[in-house]
Amino acid sequence: MRETVFGKLERRGREQGFKQGVEQGIILGMQKFLSRLLQAKFGTLNQEIIDRVQNIESEEAMANLVEKAITASSLDELEFET
Image 1 (cartoon, one colour):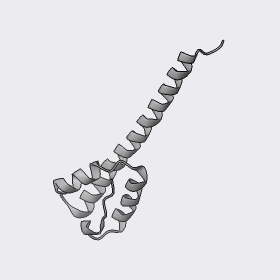
Image 2: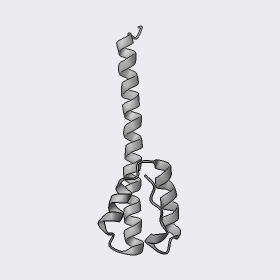
Image 3: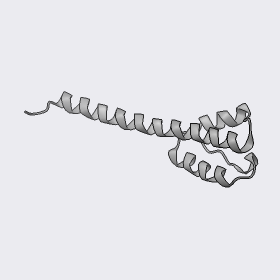
């Protein structure tokens, strides 16, 4: 059975939506992990730090920050990218 043009567009749209959803889920999970890591290492976080973590939208930037946070001795050592 041949797929119609509309069917192809619909399928591509679902695939793209699924991919974007997965990427957003990964970033959200990394944001939560980073917040918990920072809180465990440095105690209660102020709202500015929480906002900075929540504003990171790049998976690569988040991964770099997690690596830095693991070895950081203070919050001042972290550079937040968005």
